Image (cartoon, rainbow, N blue to C red):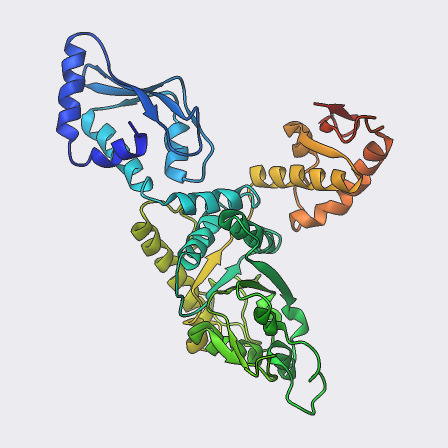
Length: 432
C-alpha cells in the first residue's frame, strides 16, 4: 500500500476505515497495514501504518518510527508530531490524512526539482517552492509561446542570487543532460538610456556595434537562463527592451546570424531578475519618487496542496507584488508581462547558522580540505548576530579559520573527510 494513495483515497471511504478500526478495537487490538510505502523524503521508505481506538480518541502510529526530510511543508509538520499521534475522534484524524492526500498529487519531477533547490538555498522554503513550481511548469511545455520570467525580490543577502545560480545545475540535473547554461548580467551598469543597446546590439555606425550583445547568447543555446541582477539599478529604457521578449518570446537583433536571420527566439529561455526592492512599497523601481507605502500584507504563509491549489496561492501572492510594482511607477504593460514575482523573507537564526556551515565548507575547499561536517554549536558561535547579510561574515570567517586550515596536515592517502568542532578559541579538525 502507498501512504500517499491511501490518504487520497480516504476521501471516498472514511466510514469503511472507521468500521474496521472499531471492530479491531472491540477485540483489543489495532488495525494495521504491515507494509506501507512512505512518501519520497521519508526514512525508512517502508513502515507499518496502524490505527488504534482508545475510548473516543483515535491513535495513528508508524512501526518503525518515520522521519521526513523532504520539501512538502504539510508532510514535514505531520511527521514532526511524533511516531504516535492522538486525535479527539475519527473525523479529525481522517481530515488530517485527507490533507496529506492533497499534497501527494504533486508530480515527482516537481518534487525532485524543489528538493534539489532546497538543499542549496537555506531558509527560503516558500520562495524555493514558488520558483520550482513555475520552473517545472515551464520546462514541461513541449511548445512554449513565451519564456519564463521571474522577479526575485527581498532584502539583501537572503538567497536571491544564490537561487538564481542554483537553477541551471538543478534543471540540468533533473533533465539528465547539460541542456541549460547561465548568462549573468549586472544591471547596475545599465544606468543610462543608451545602455539598452548592450542587450540587443548598437545600430550601425554607433559605438559598440561590433560588441556581442547580451541577448544573442540565445543563438548559441536556446535554453539559456538569463540572470539580471539588481533590476532597480537599471534605467527605465532597459525594461522596455524586455516587453516584446517576455510577451512574444522573440525580438530582432541588430545583426544577422550565419543563416541571414535577425530573429532571436527566447521561448525556451528563463529570465530571472533580482531586486532588493520591498514590493510592499519601501523602495521604488525606475527612478521615481517614493510614495505612501502599500498596506498589502507580506506573503509569508507556507505553500502546499495540489498543483491547482498551489497555482491559486501563487497567483494571489504574484498579484500583490505586481500591484506594488505598478504603484512604484513601472508601466503596467511591463509588470503584467512577468510570469511571477517571488518574495524572499529575512533569514531566521537556523538558516543563518546553516549558511555559516556552508560557508565554512566552501572556504575549506579553497585550502584543499574537505570539511563535510561542522559542529552545530561551533557554527552558531561563528554566526554574527548583527551582520548586514550572511556574505558580509565571510571575511571574518577567513580570518578565524585560515590558521586552522593552514595548520592541518593532509593525509598521505589523499583528501580525507573532516569535521570541524570545538570552541571558537580552540577549534580542531578531525577525520571522519
